[in-house]
Amino acid sequence: MTTTATQRRDTDGYEQGYGHDGYAALPGLMRLMSGDEKHGPAATSTLDALWVLYDRVLRVTPATVDDPGRDRFLLSKGHGPMAYYAVLAAKGFVPAGWLPGFGSYDSPLGHHPDRVLVPGAEIGSGSLGHGLPIAVGTALGLRAQGLDDPRVWVLVGDAELDEGSNHEAIAYAGPAGLDRLHTVVIDNSSASWALPGGIARRFEAAGWSAATVDGRDHEALYAAFTAPHPGRPRVVVAQVEPKDA
Amino acid sequence: MDSMRERFAPVVTRLLDEDPRVAVVLAEIGLAGFEEALRRHPDRVINVGIREQLLIGAAAGLALTGLRPVVHTFASFLVERPFEQIKLDLGHQDAGAVLVSAAASFDWPAGGFTHMSPGDVALLDTLDGWTVHVPGHPDEAATLLRHAVAAGDDKVYVRLSEQANAQAQPVDGSRFHPVRQGRAGVVVAVGPLLDPVLAATEGLDVTVLYATTVRPFDAAALRRATDTAGTDVVLVEPYLAGTSTSAANDALAHLPHRVLGLGVGRRELRRYGSVDEHVRAHGLDARTLRERIGGFLDVREGLRVRAQV
Image (cartoon, rainbow over all chains, first blue to last red; front, side, top):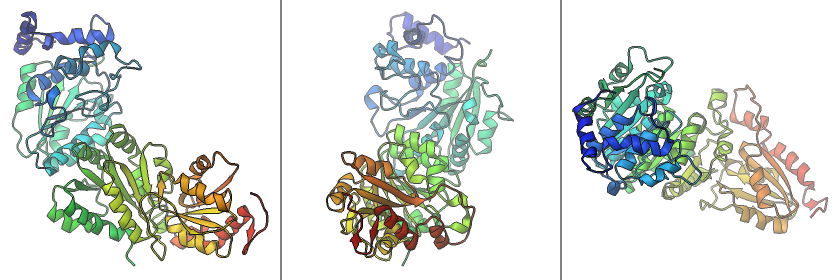
């Protein structure tokens, strides 16, 4: 993992006693779910992108999860949601006390998230390829109601892009000019048949604004997440360690 | 008489004018009817192109922001092709929508099997919480469309067909209605099959119930009908034969009873031709229905041969 200025700042804040809501708290929160001492790259592939989004980009808090004007974040890649739950706990959407029950019968936190059970979760996911089409509809619904401020974010995996439903959404959103729609692709090289020409180019061909960055570099992620993209939807491809490395 | 499908766009256009929650989602099919609505409500008439997974997914997203999506295409591409989106994007997300299909089981026989969807209602039966309307006349379709859109955030399916009865019946969006009273059995006629059923049972001593809202299944109406007509029941449905047999059995679980489920057969005919030819091929014409109903209920003209109940 590359160390960045942001990480150092977050870590410093945690060590200086700024509380349990910092980036440095996330491994401990994940340990509450798994009991593992260390998590491999696959379990944390989404962690840095999620953290930067919830810490610095998304305008949503535990108090505004039902506010029509909130930003929406849709976790489409529902597999391996520990990093997601850890971030939601760090930001106060779910109590940290829920984490040890992860996956048990009485727990609201399953191995795939359920929006009906998890405060702050905009969709239930698990079956791949559903988040991006729902995000398109969410963006359309906000526009139709004159809610011009909220932005819509959806996180997918690189192998998830194998599912054709994503390409229905990608090919529609570009020409439709859905500029409030943002996709984060976590690219851990897990697709058996990688998209020829690269992921970003596939989106660009459909009229999206695109950037590819180091998915562990918080400043690079933040810059890519906040770059202007008038009239076009935006994709940020966050490259992390290969799943099988 | 205009068709059910010709009523669809005018009715929903008016609802778009009246209710800011209503949005229409299309996948090219049916777009021509919404040209004026698209001009008046460009953000609430959405055509996603020929993309049926996106059709349902986008509708779910609209619903999650508080809108009431009305989603339309042929039944094959509305229910069968994106079925997992119906299960997950609507059901699992706890989001509602009104799905309005056209082409039914074999409205366009010359179009072949790809445009036939006799299994749509049976598929929805594998899911929880769907209301299913099967109008039998364009006027009923207009009424049931308005019921469907007004049903809060419910999940509602409206099955439009080119096949229709000559006269509209009163429909209320929930109950079965008796249209003929008898003592030797109950025939439940669904939607466009009322006219053939009435012709088939002419002079037979049977009760005919007319059903346009088939889910939830009006178990109370069926039980009431059996009080005087006995517990031999024939279901005549314009989709897969037997689709409602288990619902009828459940309604009569406390009584000895018999149920015959008539409808569209599973076997692929591999025939083109006309609607009438397909009606006959599936045994749903009045003459064949009379033989099948009469044989099951063991009734003859005006009298009951076998006292069974």
